[in-house]
Structures are given as C-alpha cells and as structure tokens.
Length: 312
Image (cartoon, rainbow, N blue to C red; front, side, top):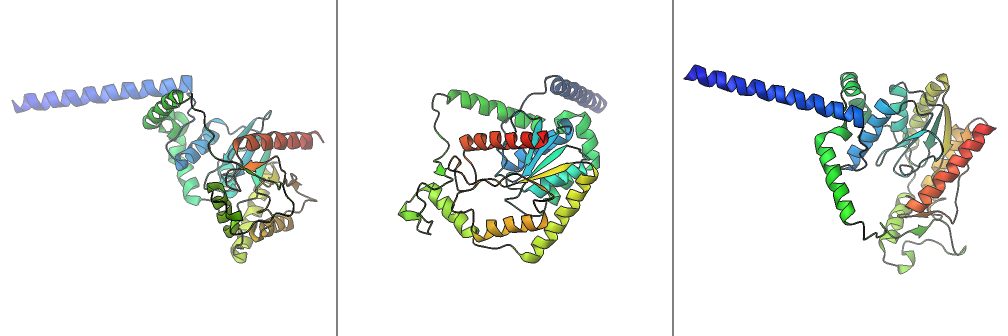
C-alpha cells in the first residue's frame, strides 16, 4: 500500500513537472514570436526596470539615448531612432551607468542636467548581474515586463481603460511655464490661491532655495567626466540639455548654481549644448514636470535641434 502510494505521488509529481516545462516553453515561444507590448506596470520601480531591460536586451543598437530623471521621462525624439533611459525617481547618472556597463555604443547620448545625483548602484547591480543577464537574454519570461502577473495586470488595466474611455478627463490642472505678467513675483503665499498645483510649486520653491553640498558635487562632476571620457573612447557624443521648468523657479539658487557648475565643468565652446528654454508655450503640472502637450512640443523642438546639429 505504501509502495503504491509512493509510486502514485511520484507519478503525479513527474506529470506536474512535465506540464510545467511544456507550459514554460510554450509561454516563452509565444513571447519570442509575438513580443507583446506592455505599456502598463504595477509601480514606478517596475517601470524603470522594464525600460532598462528593454534597452539592454532589445534596443541597445538605438543611435540616440536620452538619460535623465522623471522630468525627461516623457520626452521622445520624433523622426529619430531613440531610447529613453530617464527614470522616475532617478537621474541621468544611472542611465549613463547602464550604457557604459552594458557595453552599448549609441552615436549620441542626450544628458538631462536638471537633477544631479549619484547613480543608483543597487539598481544597476541587480540589472546587470552576469548570470541573470545571460538568462534574460535567452528566456524572456525572466524579464519584468513578461512576468505573468504583470501581463495579467496589463490586460486588466487595458480592459478597465476601455470601459472608462467615454470619460476623458484631464490628468491635472496645468500651469504656465512662462509669465503672463512680467511684474508678477512668486511668494510663499502664492497669491493666496489654494490649489494643488500651486502647493506643488511652493514645495519646489522651498526645495530650490537649498544649495547642494559642494564637496559631494565636485566628486560627482569628477565621476561624470570619467564616464564621458569612456563614452568618447567609444566615439559616443554627449549632448547636454536642460528641461524647461516653471519660469519663476528657473533662477532660484539650486537650479542656477547647478547650471553654472555644468557650464563651468563642460563649457559650451568644446561641448554640445542645446539651448536652455524658458517659453510661455511650455506648461507643467507641478512646476517641473511638463504636461503632455508641452512634453510633445518640447520633444519636437529638441528633435529638430538634434537634426540641425547633425546636418552641420
């Protein structure tokens, strides 16, 4: 009886393993053949991982790569073959680190200068683990975007969006990125208007009063120079650009100081810079993040600038 039970359990276990292997192989073959586009993720961190993995395993040959923070995460380059490695909650140094450590060789790297912080080493370490790199290169289901739970979430979210497609409400109130009255000044009271957008601007106003630690910044600029030298050895050109922000935040201590330091370390006479823009066309949702129409407008203009630069 015990022997029969043992053999029966062993048979069930073997069948389960065989079924799992068949399903696993079938699922990966479907992914390799169809390459479904996953546009919805469960959280910000997962979105960052997916963007990085898609670059490393599928788009490393893109000639143009954007590196930056959440400010430039919505930017594209219409008409150009590009990839965006700007991470929400991240910074340009992390994207640069991924390009270097993945041995990618784009022709141009567009470097956002608004947020200057050290790279997220934990993020890149997990992403570029040698063993996982080989596994993910061959087996797509090990990548974040193709994990079954994420695909189920994407399908449910897509279905929910279709149900709500009739009610197309704007995501948030936009605010002008340029003045309608030249004599108007931003104050902590923000003209006593109690709105979410003005509260967010006020928060940025406070944050931008603080200067970064000078020693830490100098060390970071030194690391950035080393990284750019590595890119130069690979014949990769770096294009610096600053994202538009609310006009009354532009010359506050932090952004002004950071801008001057970038110009000091990477002078315009021997580095490529796209013109800094403060324009009434651009609107934001919180003072620093462009709303979708403005992001689209800025994307077109920055792509035009890059094209003109290449044609010279």
